[in-house]
Amino acid sequence: MRAFTVHTGLVAPMDRANVDTDMIIPKQFLKSIKRSGFGPNLFDELRYLDEGQPGQDCANRPLNPEFPLNWPRYEGASVLLARENFGCGSSREHAPWALDDYGFRAIIAPSYADIFFNNCFKNGLLPIVFEENIVDDLFKEAEIAEGYELIVDLPRQVVVKPSGEELPFEIDEFRKHCLLEGLDEIGLTLKETDAIRGYESQREKTCPWLFHAIK
Image (cartoon, rainbow, N blue to C red; front, side):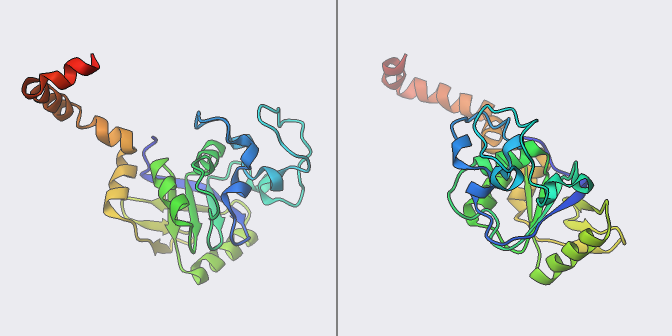
């Protein structure tokens, strides 16, 4: 998992509430569990005018001209601005995979569905919660100023606007540590490799019959 420290990124707006995980990555793309290759199909039903299929080359598909991510001004965006209850619906981990594969590193919204919120941290995405009035202001500023960028400073827990104004955000200390170190659950476990091997070695001495049964 990629570590997250300080990120400066172009902001793209997703100005609708209750965006569910099927809208983020439609169900037909859930056959793969590789965690990569989902970026071209992020928001597939909104982004394209035809129905996408797994393995399809998206380069020549007809784009929806009304969808913001298709606008040149938001090309290369890595901070997603969203509305309340983002990531609701089914608990597919493919949703943060698709957002990450597209290039997003942080999401800003008033609220998230719990499972999606947790899955973001497990995949190196930083979901930030701000009050609705703050999110409203960010939407307005991003619409007015083309090339609108935000600095997301995780160590200091602030989002810095182009004006220099700092917006503090809350994050659980353990999740912050994992993001800063680039550690998912597997990474956390591997940090204890020596202790695990020591336990297994001692366990084999006291209960050898258990290990003989599995060898």
